[in-house]
Length: 308
Ligand SMILES: [Zn+2]
Ligand SMILES: [Zn+2]
Image (cartoon, rainbow, N blue to C red):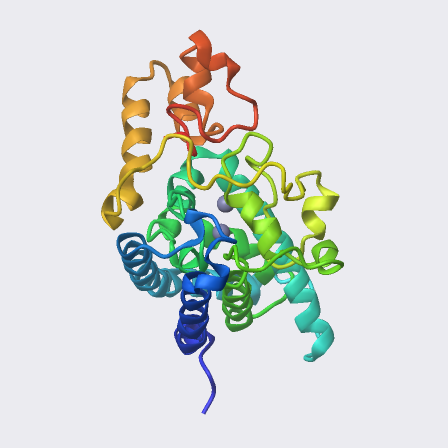
């Protein structure tokens, strides 16, 4: 019987839960308790919200594959440019290509408000532990995440392999959501690590919109978005204008609501287009006044992504 890659994350659920159990135990031990910030710890309301968001995301994802896979198949059947010999080389090429596309998707998710409206969910907790990895949006299919993998079909990879590699990438990223693992030496130069990803989740000015890596950290170094974690500036997690809610529905839809509001109040087609597709802080800058001091790369503008 062939394993259907669509069930990969579910199959790994026992591993994920065991790791969460270990981390929660480790953080609560008297010997280690003083070593970690409060933001590392588990809080029932936050963890349950993350779990609910994971289930909602899984349901939406299963539906999305029903649409996306036939699109990949159509492109693969009619427009593929390359023919790969089955084997390790083809899987390696697929892995590297998808990881690069993930970098593009993730960077765009912080700089295009339409995509940020979905991705903000992953950033809106003020805690960071392994359960934060579960914090995903059911709106990713609407935002168009699946469109970013179409080039893989064009490169000659069949749909089942595309689904598999997307999920492998996501599964890997579970392990970088922790404060219990320090910097990992030379691995930091090659792979996305807990230290790298703590920076990504931080709202400190020096850390905002940095470290977009999925599995390989080389893309951030190549494209100038890498920042190292600095012990003198510990990450503060979450979005600049905190959500202050553990309601998974509010976490999922608050930015879509804010975006719709901004779309409605803008005058003219250009401004309305920008309200949807410009960087998340565009509306704040458009409104002028002291909001012009919002840094260019700040995805947390008052009407924007990480500041909403
Ligand atoms: Zn992100
Ligand atoms: Zn993350």
